[in-house]
Length: 184
Ligand SMILES: [Fe+2]
Image (cartoon, rainbow, N blue to C red; front, side, top):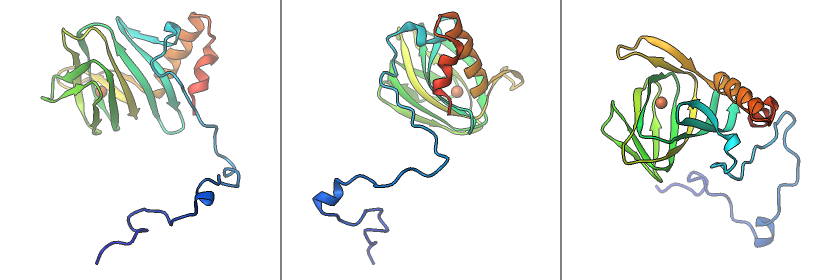
């Protein structure tokens, strides 16, 4: 027996007029404002928060209420990003360049997407022939920096990212609270 339209997630057909009629009611009490960003690869260099030498990030969302963040990571050199372990899932969308992990044989390529599972331990490498890499990362939970045997050496989460952004935006004259517009 074949599945019904409803079982396949297809809505009931509507007249053209009804299909173009917006929802007539307000959002439920308690919803927070949408966050819309036009230019995720910011032209204004001040928006890029330095994280280490030649590595910076452009915040898109600090999800403090659910312990995650979304940002564009930019690496302007070929090299290695510190080995770390993820407690939660990671979604990666490569906007420019390419990279791979020392621990895996796959390569994240421009225009591609990768899902990284909780428990992942990896070391990100940008190859020598890539001048600039930019990837949109959605990272849930904490990221623990580890030595080659898994011993913790540091950590990062939505709160360290937010603290770094607030400090940077203050230092470039935008004000620490510029970062707060990305908080939900
Ligand atoms: Fe990672």
